Length: 515
Image (cartoon, rainbow, N blue to C red; front, side, top):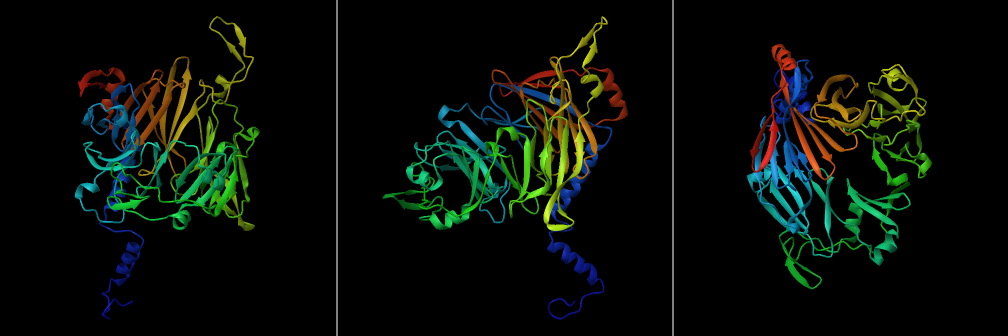
């Protein structure tokens, strides 16, 4: 192979060719992504070492919901931001209490721009996109809370409440509270619409009878957009002239659907539960009858054919249902979670029929239960009295270890699970880290605080940080921050005999408890 200009390559051309081939696939020896992957590999190795522990370094409480995004903890309706990275609580910013009209309804973290140059260097830093009760969309500095951009959406006739990503970090969806559909929309989409969303370029419409219909949002835009506009530019609309995104003009409603758009796909599923994923494309539904609750059908999106072994039913007898979803690691696998069992399933071609796929187990994770102890129908009290149970325990009985949370840490390629056991008022939980490829248990992290199964809980495992956010009755919220510590054997021995001293401090008018 000769390079451009006809000059023959040096003797090491084969290596150069391999390098060019690797570059064509996105691999660069000095690329920041390569360095990050190496660093994440090292961090994973450190986390999984036997002498590495996670220490509860500090705790705080709040009378309003607590949110977490990439190393930042938000309190007081996003008016207070605390770094979760420092060993002691470090307030990044604290803003004055906002009025009811300035209340933040929803927020998204904007981490980096993709595919284009930006005019201001500050635009490359992380931002928080927030939606206010008065229909303002604000872009805040994630580190200082400073308002960088303001966009007015619409007047009081429409109340926007929800933010989500259509294409992550590129295209945002802003959704209003549900309004009664105008007559024209009812003629096109029907009378029983209960919800609507946009994801990955697909308009998703849900109906009260369990029907889900999919339409191409791009096709709708191309067919029904009356006139395009740009933010910050003057625009004439319905006899009014104003600046797009400025008060009181806002964003004109420039798509008017006058005919039923082409239907891409429809399915009927219990409670509108519907997911698409896998390779080749498949979807998961539950047949639209109450008796099928907890039964999942995995079907081909191409021809609606049920996959071989495509009916997944754990036959759970539990208060909380099992749940299923496509694995977020883009492997095309499926995760099915029950009270005491996690199945990771994979799609593969049937050997005798390449047009059909079958579902098989990749690996399973089983809760640690002492069946003989817990499920025995006969127990003996301390006085020797024999007691017979007249009922069988539920599969998610709190006295048995039960899976509550399953998540995926994409940077470390680890599958995390939270399992809980509660006997009486004392509940104990642990976060387990599993190899994402084989399901092997690599690390178990005990959560020291008591876990009440009747409360609402969120657990985040983010690189070397573990966060547990708990909602108690009467709107009491707590946040427990754990950080990775590589202890020596001597420190481990000391920690077994010494009770850690907890210190209370006040910062920014807020009380923190740390060790």
